Length: 153
Length: 101
Image (cartoon, rainbow over all chains, first blue to last red; front, side):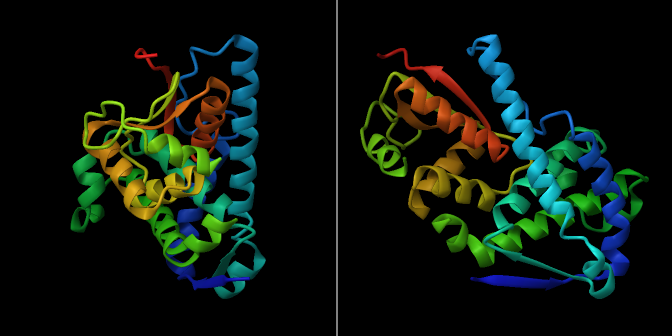
């Protein structure tokens, strides 16, 4: 089984987990992405939404499980065929929610090109933005190293 | 699942963006969002529809540049299943009737 281990800076990442956890808590009862299902009948729509929510919550649970006691001891997290898809989807959900909430006032250009101006951002947008970038980095790492595992899974 | 999607994709039906529009009674359409990484969208298209890298990238670029891409068309039940799976991956996907049918 292919597995990648990533060593993270506890000093940098640990503070970002607070804001990420807050977003995950907010996703407990709402979908990260808007879904347009007007065409479905009410019962099917409700079941559809519940199934999506259940899937989203399970993905977020697996994502948060990365940051366990071992992470806080060593700074390491690992991805493999067991968690890669869930973590990818959870990162997508959390980023979407961040963009629609804490980061909603930032223009796309700032989000896409933010560099030195990050330090000039006000809290809590600054920390949320760093979390947003961190999650994208995790996604890129997984896609870069485990894409064949995901495609075959 | 992926095999059918690939077959549908090869049937030209008057696409407008250089991509052949899949034919069928119901269309699965992916809409642009400002958050999802391009590499993520490509991976999701490959995973769900079995597209090769080049076709997945073309659909991703169509979404990015034109705001939407028809990624599959066919029977309603299967189209619903694809929309659900795309939404599970947090892409904005909708189902729309193909007026030509």
